[in-house]
Image (cartoon, rainbow, N blue to C red; front, side, top):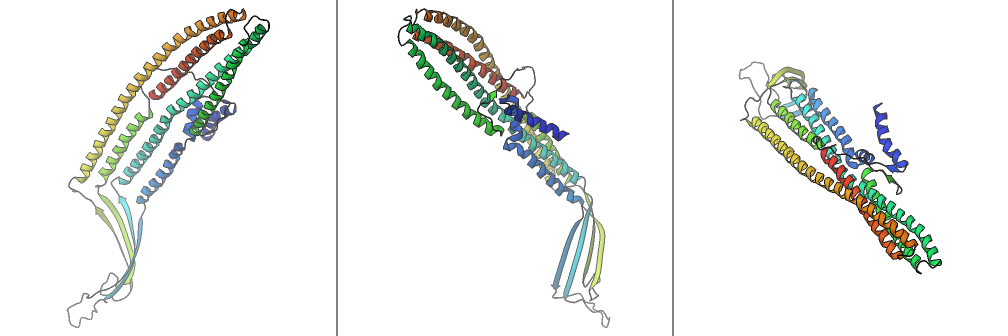
Length: 416
């Protein structure tokens, strides 16, 4: 069931692209799914599983095989005349199989497993942080493409308006109401619009190709990027994955400290050794004999000149570095949020003024249209007013996209 849900989540953006539309959230999901860095999460899990298996083997018995043949310059002898005991041979042979089994390790194995699990979580969170940082790059590309769409739509609107006026101007020239060649002025402007459309389309294709590379999915050139509904909340606390990473780093250090503390704990081992040799355990029997030894042994390092303690102190100091990194991150994030909020307020104010400017330009153009029909002004004068309206609409459109970009970046900085 879980696989079906994940499949559906990743399929939704692909379906949206197939329908020739794409949202900003789709791009975020596709980056997390397809960017090459995302595969490291799976690789890390595989690596950690192998490392845990290696640690678990310490719970299993250890086997070793040894064989040796030696020749001694001297051997033990019994200094009793006529004792009837032959000294051992100077050439001796032995083959052994030894088994060691850890019975009690002071919790070192479990501490090692905990440290490995903490390391895995930290590395996975580092991957998540790196992927999260790609979102601002996605924002830049997404809103740049969105801006080209808006500019293209404005040019098409201007083109349609000029085409409708061209017919009127041609009729006015034919009837002698307008000056000859007035229609040529509009036709020239239509050619310039055609050039502008070509440039915008090429820019859009280039931006789409770059975005496609990042999200790992081919985006058709005719795709329509949907305008996101963005809101910002000043009162919400920062929820960046970096903050979780700092906590995981500290936890990783703590597990390393716990592992270090277990290293000098007493360890109880069971052992057994079986062998075949000449001589066997009885050094006075000059024949090949089987033998075995079983027993228990304890190892403990009660005194190491405080080396272990100092190593743990060094690890503890690392937590101070992590705390310092977190403090710096919070400071930089706070400054960045203040700067972004200033930009948001600035563009919001710009747009309020843009609306008034565009409304006034439309009234001026409406008057110019009437004057052009009656031959009061030339086509060039009309074109000037139309261009003024287009440029102001273009400026307002640019401010709107910049405002959305600032809001999207603000939310990414905030971790929303």
